[in-house]
Image 1 (tube, helix red, strand yellow):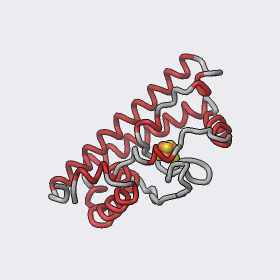
Image 2 (cartoon, protein in one colour):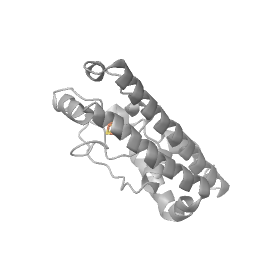
Image 3 (spheres, protein in one colour):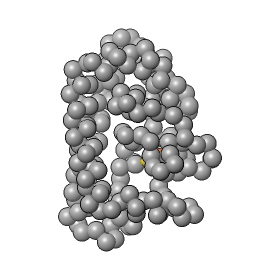
Image 4 (tube, helix red, strand yellow):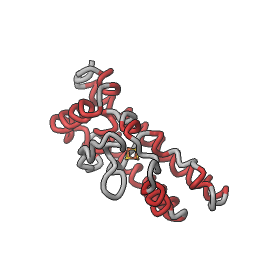
Length: 173
Ligand code: SF4
């Protein structure tokens, strides 16, 4: 398995690599102490981000924006921001990662209600659009940015820990 493909292959190939690695090494990865530690921290950080988003009623806001023609952030191009290690991290968090749509317009991982991924590409946590800023205070925006930043930091650490474990198995060249 080529490390370059892990990040730059087409989305279906990256997902297939992650599913294969999860089937072969998922149990070992899930038991590795750094992975166990980071997943627990990520659960906390994700709850914190959810709290900040709930306080700003973002679910309704994003749903309304996404329902408009050409609205929403989840375009097909965004699906290319995913990579195999991100998919693998989601699988380790118990997310059954599957392609949700192939309509040539929207991101493949946009489910019927919202994104199915618990860990998302970095651009998907950039909540700095005018629709969100309008009607929310600077301190609410700052709290949202802090919560998103904390989750992204931990997510990056988890991805690094997963890669380190895989490299130690000589699975990635
Ligand atoms: S939030 Fe999810 S569905 Fe939306 S673009 Fe990002 S990965 Fe795709």
